[in-house]
Length: 399
Image (cartoon, rainbow, N blue to C red):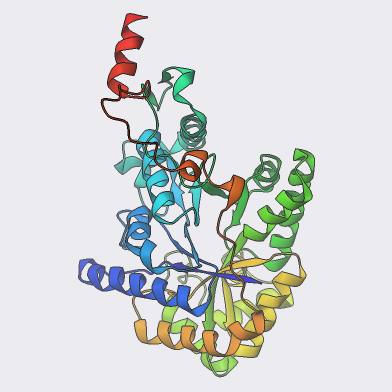
């Protein structure tokens, strides 16, 4: 199966920033060498989570060192970005990675930190902002200079493009991207539109249900069997993984790593993480609302145990038709010794049994025609191409 890894740690403040940036850089290079299919970086702001902030810059830094592994973002919250600059930056990164890129887009997260307010956006308009900017991004990637000027006059996207998008992407017609969602309706829509699906943490039962909707959408889209298989293979579900020599030690390590996770309310629930997990697995019906929510959180997010148990849980995903799992070993707040111990044991004792695979690099028709053609012949005193933005702008003005 395909095992990806997400470099997504929490810091405790500015003193951790530099250490975590370098830890994630070095960890991504090691993961690529160890056989992971994809290394991903997220985008967070203002909250000590993923303090590198910019996954595209991290991808550019890592591009020479990833070998057969792909690079991905999990996720880029599109509402915060200018679509024109985003399209250019992603195309450039696609060139640097020779097309081995899968960019994840999301509508952003409301409530975890005041991102929308800090960027001057109304969180109540989250979905509408995302839809308009995603539409603009697709228009930019599909635009050809011979189509004439491209203009945007929306509520959140204004301006346009006179000339051409540069650079072109390595992969044609544009870089690969995935959509992050856990909503049933959107899972089906992602399939219908022929995109890659990235599920956030959820139980295996929920993931299997959402993949069934995703497959239904792919079938309704009328795509070839080969295309559908490729979309399914690159889709994924995310889990935090903690491995130790025994189940007891793994849960103890997870308890230390998670600490006071802001996503897990402990004020009304004093159970251990393991007890939360086991109560959820047992289907206890006498839990309070907060206890039930915490049990659901732990069951959705975590794969914890000795190497055999962790391997078994990951293979269960493959048996359910989920070919790729996005693992995360940077669980909780800054703790490299525990992170490294869990990762090392996983690579040595779990990964071989999972038969880790790599995605093929783009070739043939998957490569942008301009990349395949290479530079045009050099001609002395050649006139400006019609694609020269100065000439294009002048022609537009005269018309």
